[in-house]
Structure formats: structure tokens, C-alpha cells
Image (cartoon, rainbow, N blue to C red; front, side, top):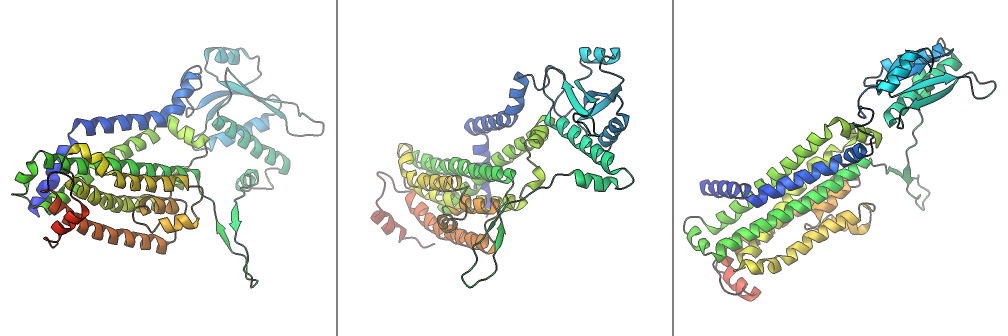
Length: 439
């Protein structure tokens, strides 16, 4: 056990310090940061961000409020804004549009615009006409929502009166009705009741599934190639003949697999920290809100099961990469040797990505139980809330049993293959050599 820990620690330190790993991690982290901040960078070039009005989307904009003879409506709008936890605007009262103080504030950029109440647009209307005037740019979605919602509440109060309804009742009347969609199962021939099942999935969970599938594919491919290349390079340089005199081949194989697994986890932790840091930036919070994305709608179960499927999927592919790497004598032949495993990984990735809009087909349900495909396919079904608890655990059980079988097979291949030099052994030669060892 001590030797296994030594191999794990040595492999982890050796791979984590390589220039290729450090540069790849930094470049990918930079690309993630650039991608997450691209909308904000574009808005800066368009003059919608910090430039022009010297305000960002999350700052409190100073807006003028011209009440005229509608002082009660203006007061209701101000009162509504005060009770908001993070209002998008701060109101400044002025007597008229032509007030010198207001004109000077607009000129100096201290005001980004103003709201003016005029006479009702149609005869018989009691609520005034409202006009929003901004300086050099359109109002932000947050400001528009604040003004519309506040005036809607003021309109309800003006119609029904303050004494008839409470503030909560008025706010409930002002809130638009949200209509959810659902799919109805066809009734049975026996005249049974019509079954229903919810089909609503938040946009942010679709994005989470995409990210996790891409992360699994890239990480498993990078770490798998690292394992195969490490074994092949030691074998081709004859270092393997020295290593097996102090550490058994099985200890080497599992030590390398676990050590590189920790390297992969380190890289994922770096990416997760970069994503969280970017999500905490004020302008990204505003962009998520304007796009209707709510982080509170994230399906936490996807993250938990995603980690489990990532770990099991990694070990399934890792033992195969190690076994193939042990039977290759030259690094030039490695790419061709690991091609079948690469094709399996690509198939798992494309099956998940191309069927994200159809997670209930028979093909996807069956693929969820095939161990080479289940890490991505079951992640898709869990993220879109299409997999039952029984299906999830049955898929995990099959995947775990497959790891035990292929781990046992890879251990026999590795133990015999690391000392077989020359051309790649045929299956018949490999099977004869494997019979000499019992694991």
C-alpha cells in the first residue's frame, strides 16, 4: 500500500508540473473567462457598458421624475422603488423638463434620462400617459421592468383605491400569470385516466448538461492519453525493466491511473473556480438576469450524479488506455493503437450532444445502460429529469461491474504486455501470455 501511495504521489507531481499541463490549463481557463465575458466586452465596444453614460447595468441609474399634476402617481412609483432590494434606478424629482437644474444634470451626465407624466392619451382614461426619455441610449431591461411594474401597481391603486386592497393583493394583481406547458400521455384503450408528466426544464439546466458532457469528454481524453503515453514511453525507453524490480506491474498501473485521475480533478477544480469567479462579477449577474437565467434553478442532483459518473467513467476508460499502452513498444504506434477507445469516447459524446432534444427515445434509454456511453447519456437524462432513481442506480451498477471486469482484464494484459517488445502481439500471443498469470 505504501508503494502504491508512492507511485500515486510521484505520478501526480510529475504530471502536474509539466509545462504542457500548466499551459493547457491556463489557456482553457482564459478561454472560459473570455467566453463568459464576451457579451459584456461586446457591449463595451457598442457603448452600452462603462462607456458613454459612466454606468454599468447593475449600478443605480439616476433618473429624473417629472410629476406635473400627477403627484400621486409619482409618489407611488417612488415608494415602489424604495421597497425593492436592489432597484435599478434612483429617482430625482424636478418641476418640469425645462428646469435649469435638470438640464444641467443631463448635460453633465448626472442623469441618464427622465420619466414624464402627461395628460391621458384617450378621452375617459384616468391614468396619465408616461414617456421615458433617455440620453444617447435605450433603457436597460432592469430599468424598463422597474418602471413598468411600479406604474402597473400605481395604476391598480388608482383604479381600486388604497382602502380596498392591501399592498400584497395589489402586487398579486399586477403580477402576470405564468402559463407552464406539459405533455399529456394518450389514454389507454380501457378508458383509463389521462396521464400527465411535466416537461418543463429550465434553460440553465440545458446549459449545465452541455458543459458537463464537454468536460467529461475533454478530461477523459486528455487523462487517458496521458496514461497511455506514460506507459508506452517508459516501456520504449526500457525504464520499465528497472521499475518492475522494485514495484509490481499492477501497483504501477493503478498508481498511474489514480495519480493522473487526481491531476484531472485538479484541472476540473481550476475550471470550476474560474467559472464561479466569473459568475460573481456584477456585469455577468446582470446579463444572466436579463436573459432570464436563474442560478437557483440549477439541478443540484446533476452535479452530484455528474461527479459519480465522471469518476466511474474515467476509471473505465483509464484501465483500457493503460492496457493498450502496455502492449505498444513505440510511441509512434500509440495513436493507432488507442483509436478504438477514442472512437468509443467520441460516440458517447456525440450520442449525448445530438440527442439532448430527444432524451426519451428508445435508443437513448438503451444507451444509458451501455457502460461506454452511460456517463454522458445518463447525465443527459438526469439533467433533463427523464431518468428515474431505479434507472440511475441500475446504470451505475452495470458501469461499476464493467469497471471490475475490464480492470481485471487490463491488469492481466498490463502485467504481461509491459515486457513484450518488438511488434505488437497478436490476440493469440497475448492470450497465451495472460494464461501464465492468475489475478
